[in-house]
Structures are given as structure tokens and as C-alpha cells.
Amino acid sequence: MSTLPLKAPIADCGVRASDSAIEVSVCIVNWNCRDYLQACLQSLREAALEVSLEVLVVDNGSRDGAADMVAELFPEVVLIRNAENAGFARGNNQAAELARGRYLFFLNNDTIVPAGTLRGLLDYARAHPEAGILGPQLRDEQGRPQLSYRTRPTLPALLHRITWLRWLGLFRQAYRRYRGRDSVPPYPSLKGSGTDAEPRPVEILMGAALFMPRAVFRACGAWDEGYTFGGEDIDLCIRVGRRYRVIYHPSLEIVHFNRVSSRQHIGFSYSHTVIGITRFLRKHGCSPAGLLFYKLALTLDAPLRWVGHAVRYAWRRLRRQPHRAAKSRIVMRGLEHFLLHELPALWRV
Image 1 (tube, rainbow, N blue to C red):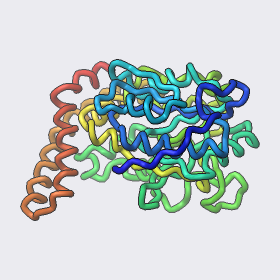
Image 2: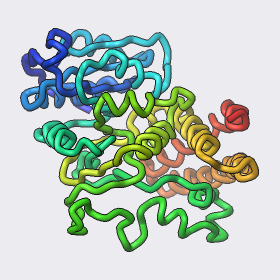
Image 3: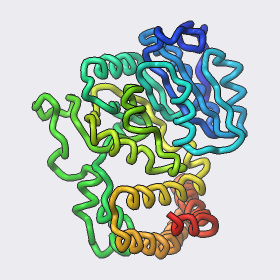
Image 4: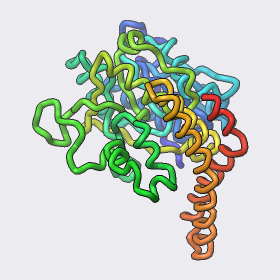
């Protein structure tokens, strides 16, 4: 990805601003995603024309020069360098500990914040103190909408993703509700209009862009550092949702390139996502018998999925479809890492 041209630093974007002048603290955790991070920071530099903000970047031991890039090109950014990958939850907590803004904006490194979005999030949060977390519509670089919210994951919904259970058609309705694929929208508009443009309460927001008052973050508890990567955003939304509203705001948008870093490190991301979701189930009420069955199903499913993707990979290579073959190979690598290195960690959860 090509980087964006730089503009002069904005004075109230950095550490020199007084605490009282900072409205929003943007917290970004980065791991080997230099060019996308640069584009994200450039968009925030422009957003600082609309909102008084500070930006905090926690670099989790990147080896691509990302931290040095931030220090050189964005001196106004508060940079925290970790010697190794401390995880997404821990990185966000490190940034939040240093944040001085009244509002925290936890933002993925593979995003771009369009003009007006940050201002809109701040204005809505100020006008609706009952909102504990606020999330925008996520769109890819082509403008296509991405999944921005969903219902709370349940054991039946997750079991439907197991290959042999899906073949049998078991738990299909639970999975459709979880993914929001039912014909009736799962959440009404706050204003009762039923239109997709109105803000509305949801259970879970996708963790790419979460805006919340710092007071709510402190009252409901920080990110659970027991999660390394995956499940921590679900956990946070559930905890905040017990005391406040979790609001999806579809008329405010963020560009999200989606899983850029995770695809580059598929073994780490796939394995820890599986482990994180399992931790969520255990922490939030899944029975011991249900959790045992889920772990067993995942263990048996991984080699079956690897074989399926290996067949697809070979077929796509034969048909000279290198892009599609590469996607199958990425999934295979993730499954290989999980089976060879992280399977014991699943059973320790």
C-alpha cells in the first residue's frame, strides 16, 4: 500500500496539549503494519482539525520499522514501544493508562477515519450519556459495508461453524441469528423509525473502532488481558452493556481494510482467536460439559478443515487461480500452527 503525503503536525494532536484541551484519546495497537498505520495516523492528523485529540500508539515489537516511522513522521503521537507482542488487550490498556482525553477511541491500525466521523462520534456521545460504547459502520476500501455489529455468541451458534455439524445442518438458526442473517433486523432504531440510518442499541460491536467515555471504561473495567487476540472486544461490550447502552451508529463510517495484520500473522491470529472465543464461553456462563464438547469439536475439526482447504488449494492451482489458491493456503497455515503449537493452550482455557 502506498503511503499518504504528510501535512504539518496539528498542535492539539499531541502531548503538548493541556489535559483540559483534549477531548478524545485515540488508542491504537500496532504489530508489523507500518504502511497502513501511517495512513491511519495521517487521517487522524486531519481529524484533529475538527476535534481536539491526542493519539497514542502501542507498538507490539514490530520488526518492519513501524515504531521508528511513528517517531520520525508523527512526533506529536505518544509512542509506547513494547519489546514483544503483549497482545491486543494489554496494548489497549497501556494506551488507556496514559490517555488524558474525556473519551477513548480504540481504533485498529488498518483503518482510515474520514472527515466528520470523529466529530460525529463525539457529538453523539456528548448528547447521549447513556451510551457506554459507540461504534460506526465499517466499510472496506471499495466502500462495501462490513459486518459492524452482531449478537452475543452462543455455544450453539459457534458449534454450527464446526464442519461436520454444519454438514448435518445443526444449529443453523442460532448461527443465522448470531450473524444477523435473519430477515428481521435484530435491533430496532432508537427513534423507532426502523431505518438503517438511525443509531440503535446492539449487543456486540466489532472491535475495529470503539468510542467510549473514559469514565465508563474505568467504571466497567479495562480490557481483560487474559485474552491475547480475539474475544476481548466481545467481553468488553458485554460488561459495558450490563450498565450502559452499546450503540451502533450507521451514518458514521470508518474505512477498515480488515484483517491486514492478522493475515500477515495467520498462525498467531487464528489460534488466539479460537482460544479467545473459548475463554469467552467459559467466562460468561457456558457449562463445563458444553465447553468440553466445544473443545473436542474444535480439535477434531481442525484436521478436517485442513484437508478440505488443501483440496481446494490444489484444485485452484490446477485451474490457474493463484489469488484464490493463496487464500486457501493462508487458512491452511493458520490451521497448521494451531494444531502443531497452540492446541495445548486451547485445552488449558
